[in-house]
Image 1 (tube, rainbow, N blue to C red):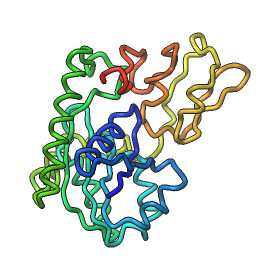
Image 2 (image 1 turned 90 degrees about the vertical axis):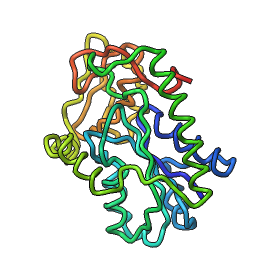
Image 3 (image 1 turned 135 degrees about the horizontal axis):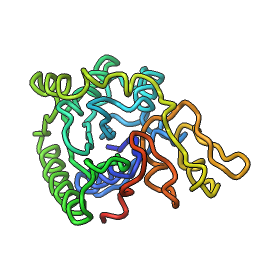
Image 4 (image 1 turned 45 degrees about the vertical axis):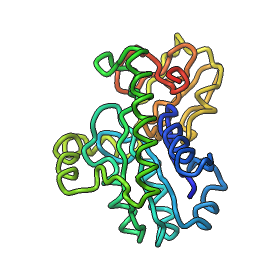
Length: 253
């Protein structure tokens, strides 16, 4: 089994890596941003696929990846890990349904509450201690899930019809437009930006460029919050107007 993931602030990578360590004492995971990942998928029958839920939906970058390479999923046995800040209903289920359309065999699903990647909204923030506790709790849940998968009893979180309706009516029905397309709403405060170029290097979409010493955003943001969580001057926002706390996973380990 190998791991495949998309991760913004590091939550999902952490969870996929921990699952592989518990399942097979390995750390054989690959980001969808790596060129070698497609070949790894082609030559592997079993995968754990992780992603961060956005408004009870799949990030645009991951949906595009799956659709663009739809031929490689046929016959693959896939266990899905969905990370989230609070609740998604059918986080694993919505990805499962898409993959099943292309012939994948979904063996199970796991939902993990992690530190919220949305860091420019005060209401969504948690203390450092609470975020560390979330990570520890998720680590224990991952270990149990890996054991159940090895014993042929993989968890089925987010895969049933009840979960489907919870995700649909909980968020997706009202916020479907948020993830239907890439967004042009990423904002960079030119007064705070120092033109260091870190955001340009981090962006998985190549959506940020540094021109004349200032970072400039385009219209293809996939809302991963990677740049926002690591900007040294907290000069970037998306849903809110200022950064309250940066939630890159290394802070909580």
